[in-house]
Length: 281
Image (cartoon, rainbow, N blue to C red; front, side, top):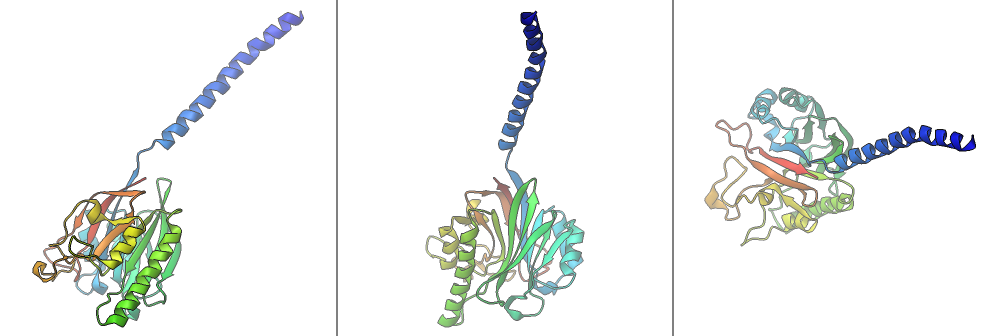
């Protein structure tokens, strides 16, 4: 009797064991599938809109709409609801307007328009409130991305001005340095400096390179020495080129798979927008 009872117990436990084993195997399979997911793609742009002097929010939104961007960082954007208006046309209904206007000028805010919600807003000071980076995070398919809308100063008047600009950019780079292990940073906007070339070393760009970051132009292998992102740029005027609007990110987490300067028949700013399609690990 005792042997028969044990046999019946074993028979009852076998289905339970099989169910638990299959469930465990299925959980492992699901985890492996998640771990092996393809990198996400994100289509982004940066545009200095010159305080919307040459085009309304609606006109700028209509021009950008067909590109179907996931996020756009604007510089020299008007305050108030301008970014909300331009975002609405593009279907980017989550917007953020930075606190400080660049260099204290009127309507030169750094702003962000995004397809996905924005959170963790921060205005990153570059030594003072005259030059800042507007920061926010967004979740895309379960991955957190950090967006920085920037408009750096341009050091040119004299050595004191150059030193001030250098200090401000170095301050921001040092801020980024502390974040690189934890975040996927996309820094986009008007950097006011060109990239290094075979004949010219850009001290500001090299700060980002030293940090393990790269511009989308370099990542895509695009020679920008004959190009410019200012509408009135003349190729013969600057051997290193005139591309001063960039999308920069860490090379170990992000890769550009497409991108370009956006040309317009009727410019809507003194700058041209730039875009990149990014693959994010």
